[in-house]
Length: 130
Image 1 (cartoon, rainbow, N blue to C red):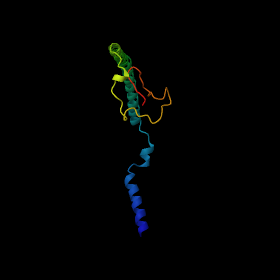
Image 2 (cartoon, one colour):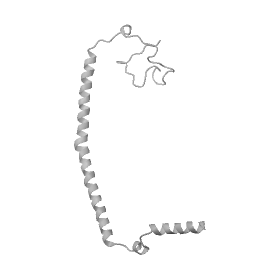
Image 3 (cartoon, rainbow, N blue to C red):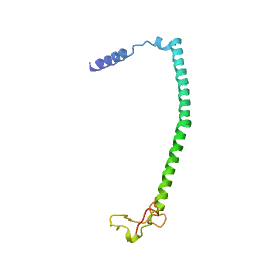
Image 4 (cartoon, rainbow, N blue to C red):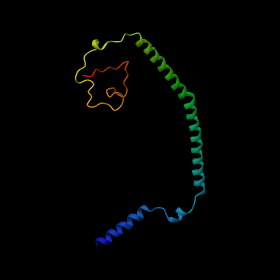
């Protein structure tokens, strides 16, 4: 009894969801196909115009903006470098003391002299070995 009930419910469930007959599925609809093809062509044309717009934006707006920003940063850093050149170098004796929690080196770095970090700048950074 349970088997027959389950098999009937499965068949009924399949019938409820199969609302389109196979005859309609196999017959092509020329008007729907033409509308779909026209929509695809419209999307393709729109994509071409949009990609051309963004290419122009990239070349005529973004590239000059990046060049202008780089030039501005260059001028700013050049001015900063000239300002630092006029400042006297502080001897190591007058620098603040190094505490045990600063510049901790468990082992030497494998590059350089082993004490300088990857972005070491001798004009700015200083480290006295203890």
